[in-house]
Structure formats: C-alpha cells, structure tokens
Length: 262
Ligand SMILES: Nc1ncnc2c1ncn2[C@@H]1O[C@H](COP(=O)(O)OP(=O)(O)OP(=O)(O)O)[C@@H](O)[C@H]1O
Image (tube, rainbow, N blue to C red; front, side):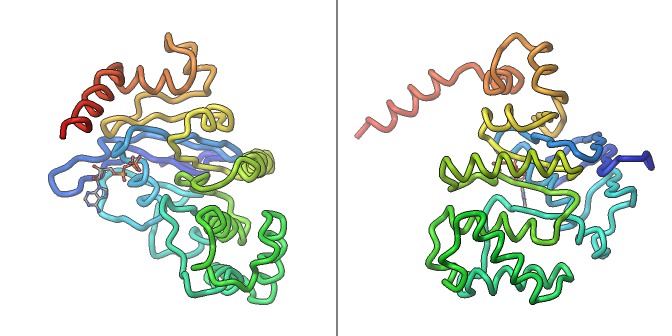
C-alpha cells in the first residue's frame, strides 16, 4: 500500500462492525512521523475502536492497516515494542508496588529489569512521585495511577504513542508538564495519537486534528485550517457545528425538568 518514507501509520478503507452495528465505515488516513494527531469525536464515534485495532487488541476488520511500513500483524511483537499506549481506563495491578508494576511492564517490552528500575525511578521522580516507589498502587490517588500509566507507556522510548484521554485525574501543574512532554517528544520525531474530549487542550497541542462522526472522518487539518473552513471560532464550537449539535440548552432544560419531577 503506502510504503512512503516517513509514513508511520496508514489506514485505507478501515471498517469495523460489532454485530450488525457499523462502527467504522471506511477510515482513510496517513500519518507521518513527528505529528501530534488530535483524534476527536462524539461518545461512541469509534475513537477507542480505531486505537484498539491499531494495537492489535481487536481483530476482524475490513480494509488495510500499515504501521511502520508493514501490514499490521497482531502476532508480531517487534512493532508492539515501538508503540506506547495509555488506555482510557487504567487497569493496573493494584497489589503491586509502582516499581514492581513498572519493572514488569518494562520487561514485557524486552528491557532488562535493573535498567527499567533505574529509569522508572527517575521518571517517577520527575513526575513528583518520589516517595511512593515501594507503595502499593491500590493506595494511590486517581492522578497518581494515571502518572504511573503514562510512565509505563513511555519506559521503552516508543516511536508511536496512543493516548486515550490521558489527562484524566491529573492536576493543573501535571497537565502543564505533560503537555510540554508531548510537544518535546513530537519535536524529537515521535508520533502521538491523542484522543480526548478536552477540546481546548486538543486545540493547543495538536498539529493535526481529525474529527470522526458516524464512523467517518468529517474534518482533517490543523486547527487554523479547520477554522478557515468553518464559521465558528474555538475547536469546541467547530466540533459542535460539525457534529450537528445546536440544541444543548433545550436538552439541558429537558434533563433538569425531569430531575425536578418527584
Ligand atoms: N466490544 C464491543 N462490543 C460491541 N460494541 C462495541 C464494543 N466496543 C465498542 N462498541 C461500540 O462501538 C461504538 C464505538 O465505541 P468506541 O469505544 O470506539 O467509541 P469512542 O469514540 O471511543 O467513545 P467515547 O468517547 O465514549 O470513549 C459504540 O457504539 C460502542 O457501543
């Protein structure tokens, strides 16, 4: 398909059904290295499904997927070593300590245990988790768990990073650090696939925004390009416009009136 230099990810006519439900109806997409892609769309649009297909966590699709110039092969662990993933819902092994968990993850990526431990401690320190190396993850707050997930996705220095709502639970200072981490990673050539509903962050960090709705791409371009093509100003307004959503007051009013019926 697309063996073009610099292409990290290429999707052609990607379709996915769950039973009779068509979730992805033909996604065509080519991503080159060093881009931060903001992958957005309404609840249920198919964002997580796309990411799961690319990670080989879901099979049974139509169309073509190429990662690093190779046809996707979920049994091939080499490509997985070049990928990092922060899932929407963190499922950590709560009974392990943070260092046990991170060492375990690093070893799965083929890293040597002693090296992972040193690197994990340095990353935890840099993210303000200095005093909890040996605490069980079950005792961590939501934001602390999210930081461990972020560190575990980056330990092996991946080329391609998939982030599904990664700021969940992070405080304002940590958000600022993480946004800066992403722009420095992209500047060093890493490719980031960023899926989120926090529109002002997507607007600021992405150099390309892809909006899916009804299983198809309905917008693809930089924020400036999307602004030129649409009447509305902020990404939130462009999102509402392109997804045909102009009745939030009526819906909220209906919701409140039902709540107030006793
Ligand atoms: N395992 C599954 N079995 C059946 N249907 C599924 C499955 N996973 C996802 N779906 C359906 O596929 C559609 C897309 O789901 P997906 O999780 O990809 O959406 P999303 O864009 O990530 O949404 P959100 O913004 O709410 O996270 C939804 O209608 C969902 O019900």
